[in-house]
Amino acid sequence: MCFKNSKKARFFLTHVLNNMRSMKSSYPIFLIGLIFTICCSFMPDKQDYPRLGIVSGLAQDSVAYASGFKMIGESVPKMLSPQLTDEQFNANLEKIKAAKCKVLSCNLFFPSNIKIAGPDVDDAKVLRYTETVLSRAGRAGVKFIVLGSSGARTIPADYNMVKAKTDFIGLCKKLAQIAGRYEVTILLENLETTETNFITSLKSAAEVVKKVNHPNFRLNADIFHMMREGEAPDEIIKAGKWIGFAEVAEKEKRSLPGVMGDDFKPYLRALHQIKYKGFIFIEGNIKNAAAEIPLAFTYLSAQIAAVYAEPKP
Image (cartoon, rainbow, N blue to C red; front, side, top):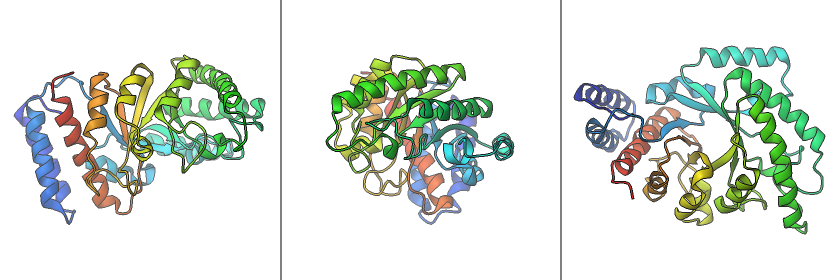
């Protein structure tokens, strides 16, 4: 969203003004948007910075689009699950087609009753499920499937961690092959210790992605989880070449950017250092969509614009 000329800058400023009329805390938001607009008016039109999306679901499609987002995230259970009949899935295809925003990603890949790590993994069951989900993703134009699935990947406390990782890597190689057939990318997400006991850091997730070594299996650098686990931005730099996506939310309450005023710039600078120009999706708790979604777009856009305007390290 950065503009080469003043005409585009004025267009964005008009958009900010329209958003702020419906928001109680309009003045600070206006200032952020104004700063963003001024910065962007001097930046080149070339796509040289990450693109924003939000995991708001189709229910908030219109609000997201009016706020400036062009891409949203949905969930596998709602959109692609084998539990959905063909009729239900086809109805979802029509909803996706009619949406203002492109449904680029889906999360909640595996339900907790389909284990993907530990002693109770049924490879055949996992692969059958994956085949259906990813074939439907391909038909729907969903390009990314986020592999968080905390319940599905949690292992028994006394289980051998080395064996768990070895087996998980082997399974992920099979998942990657299926993803490749349908031109979908699976994104392994770093979670946190309050959610699971398996792969709870960006570093450990990057190790898995590196060993899978497949173009359709990449790393989702979840900045929210990194902050919760106390991981430094440098881990993004170390994982650099394996990162295919990023997500963000505020640390304390997983609120949308701008609600609490978190500063994401240290992590954004790490992304800038590895020359990351992919997607950054906001995934957080939404209490007041009409106020928080426009705020999140303006607030995070301003931080991205400020960081990506800095000289590259």
